[in-house]
Length: 289
Ligand code: AMP
Image 1 (cartoon, rainbow, N blue to C red):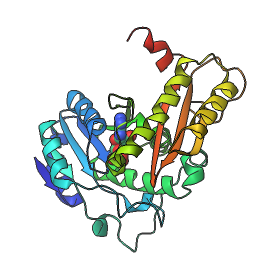
Image 2 (image 1 turned 90 degrees about the vertical axis):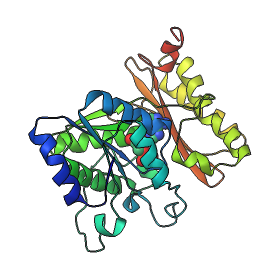
Image 3 (image 1 turned 45 degrees about the horizontal axis):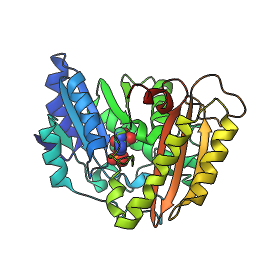
Image 4 (image 1 turned 135 degrees about the vertical axis):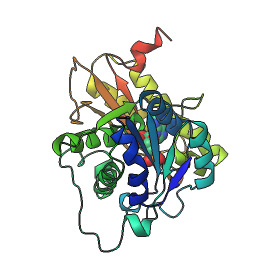
């Protein structure tokens, strides 16, 4: 498997594939790879002729005081996992080269970035969209794979690609969970054994909301908030029920699909999770499981 540290080398190696008409897939990650990332890689390998994964802990999406320094890193382990998954190359630029001090350009998506994660982390999505657009320009993939685990990010990236006419298809992939329901996250390794037990409350509350969903957005929001506020070892940041496309909070009776999103602190680790409500949601799927 190739490992590239700079854009020019990756472009040089990908160009012959593109010229030969092969479909290029990109899986952007921050590394410390787990089953969630590998599900994206597997889908990309299935759907594309050549797949590149980027491993870059994006400093622009962390605010001062957030966990950039302690964010888990395992470049060698990542390379091994990607190679076994059939990924052809790993793009691992250095922060000094990829985000040099003199850079002046920021890609900002309005509206969708104001609430939820954006309310707690006001500079986060500018960091995400600036680096995702750099990655898309660097690899020029036909398809780029993103997880629904970061649901707001997926919606924001789709809007950016649409608004800027970027010639790439954004493929959203479902959340992969550990057997007890906890969504895989690179940050899970930062949890103590006790915190790991407490963290299950997030997915349990979402599943309960999905299973009891009867189209009442206010009732679902209330029940999520009260369940998570009472859960031991958890400090709730937000629990919302939103329109899956616009991310606007929903109120009253909802006919179509909805999405519940939560964020909470477990000790010093901040976790996010979400689930679909309504048509296609976990509640409906349960019967056929
Ligand atoms: P990250 O390394 O956390 O920035 O994640 C890289 C990509 O993997 C993002 O598109 C995430 O949404 C996706 N991802 C992370 N965890 C999961 C998961 N548990 N299930 C599905 N996708 C995930």
